[in-house]
Length: 328
Length: 221
Image 1 (cartoon, each protein chain N blue to C red):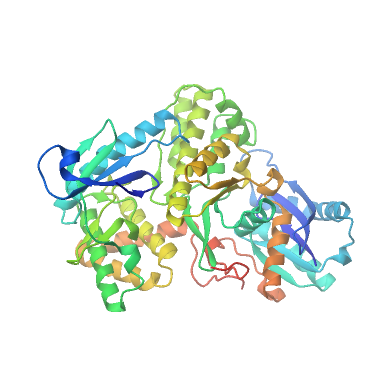
Image 2: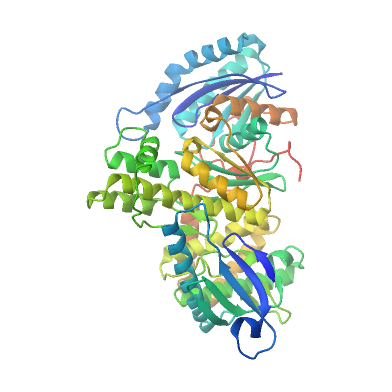
């Protein structure tokens, strides 16, 4: 069985083609880059609509299959930005009805975990999923992926990006902050906010921007911002590891590209005698292959949907989704 | 003797006399905040130091507010240790699901009342999970971990505190979350008195803000 997965929750429009044994045949994408400022949902959606055909053709070509070979359609139904979700959903519905194949709504956050489990052969990890749109600590328990910690305000990727923008760094801010942080030496104290299992980054971001305006060295500030934000992320992940006693830790999402975060998480995992996984970067970032693979898992375990049940869910939570393909 | 290896600290159960170097019966609990290699020294030291100092103070003030907490015997800010009374009992986490509905309701109401007492005393716990609550044979509930607590009388902090308790119920006691949380709120309202509804309203606001959604939006539909 061949599944075509469409991702379109935010910046990325992606098309992945995966078979039921988990072989990834294609994983094509195009990323919307705002002319200035942050993401504009409507403009991103227009970008997706304009590029859908190109990305689809690219995926089919890379997979060396014809569109008629596709047996199943999956798409990212949420969580994400409304206009982007609706564009991806429209493309998926149109294709599914034209091909007359079943269609599956996939939860974007769960897809991140599932593609990592597939390619890294992780069995039951505590996952730190960090991106510009999400910050969650996810672990499986009793039929669902439970959220063991998440941001109470802005996602960590957004914290880094907005900081970068406010201090005049080129887009995207995260990678530039990481590069500058390597030359930072002096730690500038910044607010470290962990509330039980949850995190907060908006105060940290504001204070870092204020320190910059007050004349603090930018390298030191990038270093301090990263160290503070990441220490909090690792602490919350560690709490979930201690609580669940799981023996695997996985890092995914766009911010997984940050080497320092990976290094810190790996140290923590080692202290708990847990294995540490990071999927390859193109599968950490938003992509269509993860949607396709999760669609296959759901379909193989009996999920069937009618077209009118494929509405998008902007706030679809990770812990609202039944996971029949896992036991325990 | 190492009793528990937590995420943040190790807990040791030791003879009173050996730790405190004076005559005394029984055991004490030593909470040692361990250094974490994943974070830089500056952050590590700052977190361990401030949390050790603050936590010991919170234990005392919470007790004064009428919430059972362990007695603090000694605070060592060089080794980042708190030496305290050992509370003999069972974690609420381990019993809550097994209790009969009526007993569970009573327990949850008591927890809610104690949270309200903390809040009225200007304290937020910061980590209200059922693994941080010890039920004793006499039916007292000890709040044993104030590692993330703070003095904060704001509506927001109180809202987050209750929200965290609800989240803990959702992730650990998912079969009985709703009834347990309702009972907690009933106890909270009774003890807190006027103004409790404002806090509860804030919890709902926090949940919306944190991308929480109504139950109706179920999976796969």
